[in-house]
Length: 390
Ligand code: PMP
Ligand code: GLN
Image (tube, rainbow, N blue to C red; front, side, top):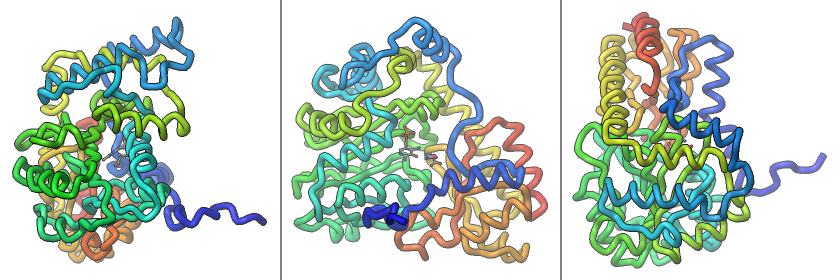
């Protein structure tokens, strides 16, 4: 038998926790608050544009950087929300989801042995993309329950091998929104060491406390920042896998060089729909946030009533709980993986063990993530079931 997964850089990655937990939910008939995807599709208006495009085109390869109309809409969006100006022809790239933008950035920016400083817990594709690029991840811990930036730890993680800072705000899985002050401290280090910042802003329209500040908008940062957005998140069409990059031409072109050999292009008939989405009125973007805020509070109250120690979420559609109390009172394991494996039988609900987002496993060992981007009745059913733990 040949050694299938021979590439040592992929050893240990296995199947993503999201697929694993969704399969568990299906097998056990549990309410799935694990994998982060909305159970209601995005605006019908966008779906109609996409359906029409499937019937009437465009259905052939779009231009490598993406359709001109969508690129223009991405540039308008950056200007409208953040006052950032990008040239749609040279500074915008459409990708196969934010995932490809992240991987393409790592492949383009890193040589073997280069270091990428990122925060942990971190979204699972970061470690894999860094590893596949042959680079080395240098995680800086955001410590629960409030996840402040430890600037000394951050400075200590930056060495003469550091090439990239990989930032995510609002942050999955913690729900942290980096403050202007924290971003300024990160920017100062990036400028001092002449680093590129790859900023994963996919949850930019889901901020409940404060505001989303793209690090590209800070003084001296536009020239060294690759910002990443996602139609999956912003328009609740996660299966479309349309993402975008805005960056100065040289950085955009670098990511495009890698991207052209990953997927070349993607989603021709969906691109005109995302273009329409990006130009929707403020009521759409405000509505998305307000809806999710109400859901956050609904689930948060339900989890508290069930005896969970719920940590505060400032943005994204995720809530984190410290499970120690509820686990001990119910004679359940108090480590997150074992707890999440036991939860479907104990209460008929699936969550994601936050431990998998950490390299320093102890820091996430008692934390569990619940997604609240679900219909109210689904959240209520989960809350009803979890009440057995109270
Ligand atoms: N970054 C973060 C932080 C995410 O949570 C996700 C969610 N899947 C992605 C990137 C990937 O986005 P996409 O589905 O657009 O590839
Ligand atoms: N981003 C989503 C999450 O964090 C799911 C992504 C995925 O399934 N790959 O849950």
